Image 1 (spheres, rainbow, N blue to C red):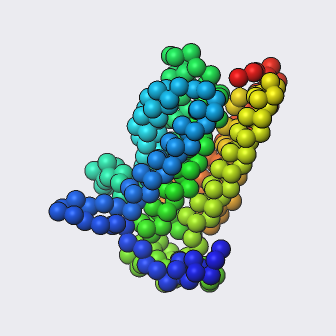
Image 2: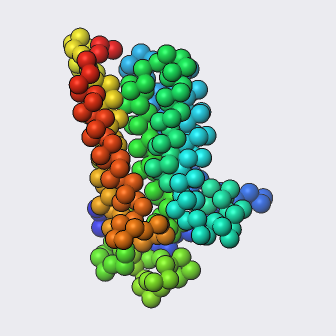
Image 3: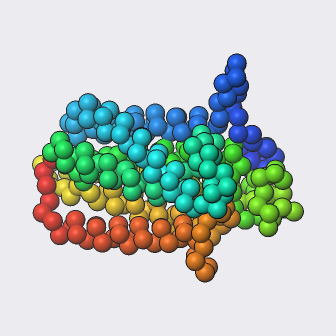
Amino acid sequence: MSFGLIKLLHTYHPQPILFEFKGVVVYWYGFFIVVGILLGLGLILYLAKKYHIHSDHVWQLVFYLLIFGLVGARIYHVLCEMPYYLYQPLDILKFWQGGMGIFGGVIAGVAVVYFYTRKYHLPFWLWLDILVVGLIVGQAMGRWGNYFNQELYGLPTILNWGIPIDVANRVDKYVLFQFFHPTFLYQSIWNCLACSVLLISHAFRFKKIIRGQLIRPGIIFTTYVWFYSVGRFMIEFLRIDRQPEFGMWRLGHISSLILIITAIVITCCLKKRKMQLI
C-alpha cells in the first residue's frame, strides 16, 4: 500500500453523495455499483467470446442476474438487520444508500443461472465459471461504496491506515474512538486477488481447450466460492456492524463456513465426473 493512499485513508472524511443536480442525488455507492457492473460485464463478454458463446445469452442472463441478484443481496442484508427494518420498513427499498449481503446475492444468482441454463439447454457449470469473474470484480468495486457510506468498517485501530469515522456513523460501543480498520479495503484487495486467481484458471483452461484436452467445468466457480469465503471469514473477526450473533460467531462466519464446506463437497463431486471437451 503506497504512502499516499495511506495518508489519504487516514485523513479523508468520505461523504455518501457524489453530486446533486436539479434535485437528483447521485450516491458514491450507486456509482461504484454501476462501475462494477460495467467492468464485470466486460469480462463476462470477453470470456464468453473465448468459449464461443453467443453474446445474446450473456445480455439476457446478466439482465435477470442483476434483478434477482440485487433482490437476494438486499433480502440477506435486511435479515441481518431485522430489528432496524422492523421500525423503518420503508428503508428496505432504499438500496441505493447501501446495504447488500453478497451471500444472498450468490444464492439467488445460482438459482437464476440454473433455471436459465435448463430452459435453453446450456452448460450450467461452465456458465457459473464465467459469471463469477464478473461477480468478483463487482464485489471489489462495490466495497468502495461502503467506504463512502462510512459503513462496514472494523474495530478501532492505531495503525497508520486506519480510517476516520464520523461520530454519527460510529457504533455506540466505540463512539469514543476515531480511527477504525478499513475492512472495505481488505475485502476489496482480497477480491482483486481472487479475480486474478480466476482469470489465471481460465487462461490455463483455454490452453487445454486449444490442445484438445478435457476440462472439468465448475471448478473455477467452486474456487471462487471457497476463496472468497475464506477471506470473508477472516475479515469477519474485525467487522463490528450489526449482525445476528451465535455465541462468538457472527452470521457472516457461519455463512462463510457453510459455503466453504459446500464448495469443497461440490469440488469433490465434480472431480469424480467425466471431463468434458468444450
